[in-house]
Amino acid sequence: MLEYSMLYPRTSVSRRTASLDGMWKFHLDEDASGEKSGWAEGIPGEERIPVPASFQDFYTEKDIREFTGDVWYEKDVFIPGEWEGKDIFVRFGAATHRAVVYVNGLKITEHEGGFLPFCANVTDVVRYDASNRIVVKVNNELTETNIPCGTTITLPNGKKMNKPYFDFFNYSGLQRSVNLVALPKESVFDFDLQYELDGDDAKVLYSVKTTGEHDVTLTLFDAEGNEAATATGKEGVLEVKNAHLWQVRNAYLYRLVIRIMDDAQVLDEYTQEIGIRTVEVKDTDILVNGKQVYLKGFGKHEDSDIVGRGFNIGVMKRDFELMKWVGANSFRTSHYPYSEEIYQMADREGFLIIDEVPAVGLFESMMNFMEANTGKKTAFFAKETTPVLLKAHLKAVEEMITRDKNHPCVIAWSLLNEPDTSDESAVPYFAKVFETALELDPQKRPRTFTLIMNSVPGVCKCYQFSDIVSLNRYYGWYVKGGYEMSEAEVMFRGEMDAWKAMNLNKPFIFTEYGADTLESEHKLPSVMWSQEYQKEYLDMTHQVFDAYDFVKGEQMWNFADFQTTEGILRVNGNKKGAFTRQRQPKDVAYILKKRWEELPLDYKG
Ligand code: CKU
Image 1 (cartoon, protein in one colour):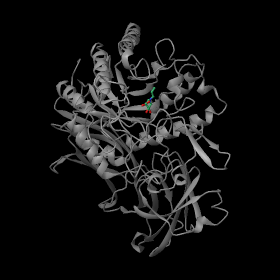
Image 2: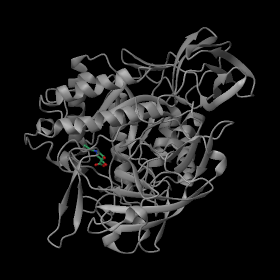
Image 3: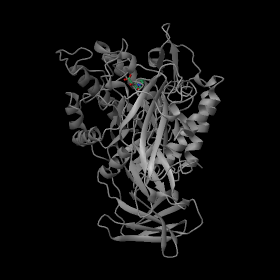
Image 4: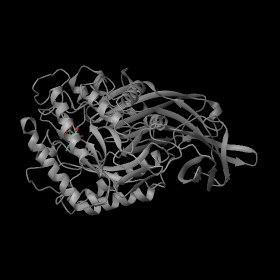
């Protein structure tokens, strides 16, 4: 069991929350001397920075944008006297990639992994009706023993630099909301839900974990606020008559209220919106509520101007409006679990999410796919340090599933993105990751990982672990682009025929396909990088999808242009977006809109 509850912070009769978002003091620690210099008690200077946000894109100095090492944040917070007697936590939505938290000068906790929440239990150190100082040291170095993978070098001038093994800018800092949370001594710690549909009715099988011995009661309210079911006991069943199902792009949310009772007294109350729906894979179908669904959508990023990877509520809203406009019904949280608010919105809007753990870069070098066809022998999982990486990976899987398991929008777990699967050493690693996810998920959702371009039949040693086989394919871009596109199509069909011949009896989806396209470039006839070429590339690729019955979904790379490390393959970022980074459509968005509005939800069903 995790040390602290992953439940989203909410105020109720028994719970209090206070947002700590806003301006925080900020300082770079160029020579990693913060602790020695007493920064745990307070950081020097008067610089202030917004939270949540990546720290990189506010400043005009390149040394700040590229800064690799420790950055320190500080905020003084007043803790009300009425909270005395409760358990007090500082909850971080995420700190990228690792953090140490000090409160009133004392070290309280540390956390490894930059995309999942953690809490500092400060009950024993806070001063009530007084100001308390929170200081956080955040470190953004990349290693091969934590996810996402990369390395950190020191330049001859003494400055450190990140070398990601992945294709997105190493944004970091306090990129998600920070909350102060007060919980009663006896509180709801976690809960699990499973669904069974029975004609018009549904059963919600539940189990609740609390920090004490008192009994719990559950009440389910429908969207009008009427009571739909009740139950008592830490484990049991909510019987819902004439259940309204949560459907794709037609969501219905119930409100679940969990109470810990001491006779008539409510010791704790926690409320969450839930959706009644089932998910399963059967033969080559993905079924939601027993009905076939075809996935249409994107691989996304949390990425926007100025705030970088910082959660931005306005960008979230715009992204959902664009996804609805273009006729999408799903997205993958490439390449890390996103901010919790995004899942809440997907629950409400009826989008399907493939939830991805930050296991990206498990293949040396960022442009690994450029080497993929050179025949170079690689064995990422045969390193001496692999057991350390696996431990961090499993912990992230546990945190992600615990955090996200009760969202109806989450229909599958993506456990790795484009790992090196060409060597046998990957097999035991995959076995452990896939088995752990199955154990942890009460709903036993389908598991997948995305296959890099050279993970083809005969090479990939790990596709058998996937319940849904997810392919990232760039025939016509990284392979045989431009005037050789017809040859790309032949190769693409060749690969698909090979998968077909294997008769895996599993659904296949495309989790990536795309072509870099500059919004400024138009050219007739097309050239690579022009808007015309992106359309031709998509048309060819879609024709191949349509030719294979076992292909049950398409998520284009990428929803929008996004920032990457600078280099000769990227023009100020990855430009494969259907939309620009400012969320305006490229021409191709209209092609997608036409196609996706025409394709029925049960396409190929
Ligand atoms: C994307 C084999 C392709 C790997 N894929 C990963 C993703 O993060 C990249 O942005 C490729 C790309 O090259 O656009």
